Length: 74
Image 1 (tube, rainbow, N blue to C red):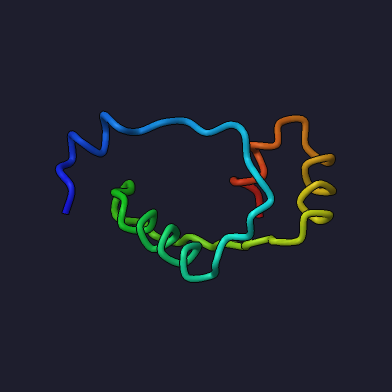
Image 2: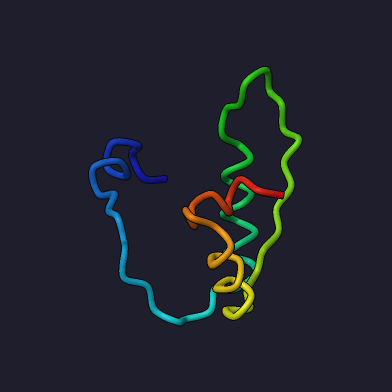
């Protein structure tokens, strides 16, 4: 396993995305890792909806002033 500080120091932001599909297994691993993060009072009443259809994503983004808000809407 990599050292925590190596991971933090090598972190980078990516703002230029390509159209390569992400495997379901990778998505499941990302969600699983996120669910292990600490929460207030250990509340884990989380629900995830994975949308892979680009047209649907663009339609949803058009309904929000801030596309980042979509991650918090149900």
